[in-house]
Image (cartoon, rainbow, N blue to C red; front, top):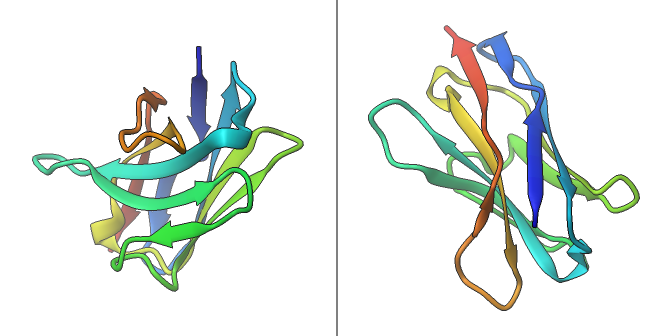
Length: 119
């Protein structure tokens, strides 16, 4: 059973930075891809960034390219999302998710952490 626990959300002014963490447990994650998603009130859950646990290949949504960085610490089984130059439109609940590389759908989710960016 994969367990994902996010932390690091909060309130920050526009232009500021936050780092989200996702502690993963319950599996050996070498065959997994990890992702960060976000959902603002009244909107769908959107992908933000993904990373392959083995090799570290990454993907970013256009809206966050150049501002956000996803990384993982294999020794700590933790995935990070460094968010810089934050904008009010980045405000959302951010979720960590995991999927096996061989599957398309993210099947394991964390509980989410709130990020609020004030203007």
